[in-house]
Amino acid sequence: MKQVLIETNIFKPIVSINEGKTSPSGNLIVQGILSTAEKQNGNGRYYPIEILEREINKYMDIVKENRALGELDHPDSQVINLKNVSHKINNMHWDGQKVIGTIEILPTPSGNILKALFTNNVPVGISSRGMGSLKQMGEVAEVQDDFELLCYDFVSTPSNPGSYMSPLNESLTKFNEIYSKTNSIITDILCSNNRCPIY
Image 1 (cartoon, helix red, strand yellow):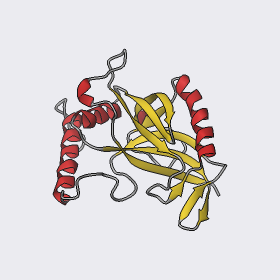
Image 2 (image 1 turned 60 degrees about the vertical axis):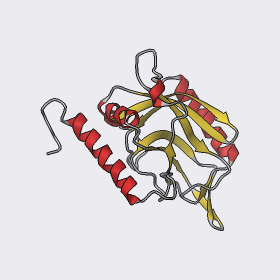
Image 3 (image 1 turned 30 degrees about the vertical axis):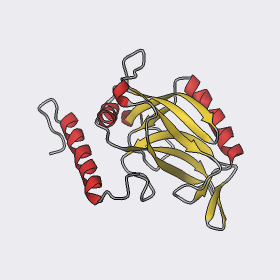
C-alpha cells in the first residue's frame, strides 16, 4: 500500500553562505545533497538507483518549468501548500549516487525565515516527500517501483536521531544553543513590524 515517504538529512551548503551567491533577482542561492541512492538511510530505507533515477528525471522536467517548489516544514500530504513555500529548485544533477541541487530561497514569509537561518549558520534539514510502498528485506525497507517523488522541503529537525553532525566531544548544550538561536531568529522576523502574532 502506498504511503507518504519522508526522508530527511542535514543540509550542508556546498557553497559558503558568506560568499553571497545570489540569483539574478537577488535571492540567496544554496547548493547541497538532496538524495542518495543505493545506500541505507537513517530511516532504514533503501532507494534502488533505477527508481530514484526515474523519479529525478521526471522531477527535472518540473525544475525546467520553474515549478519545483518546496515548503518550510512539511505536512504528511501530497499537496504543496503555496502559502508555506520557501524555495524553489533551480537545477539538479547527479554526482555518483548523490543528487545535488541548486536551490533559490524565495522572498516569501517562510523563505525569509529560511534565509535568516542560513545566514546565521543554523543547521536545517532537507527532506524529500514522496508516495510509495516498501518491501522489508531483512533490516532494510526497500522502496518499490510505485514510488513517486513529490518535492523537497526544508525542516528544522531531521527525522532520524543523530543527523545533526558535530564533534564527539560536544554536549547537548550545543544543540540547545542552536535551538535557542533558531527560536530567536524566527521571533525577530515575526515581530519586526511592532506586531507579534506569537504572543
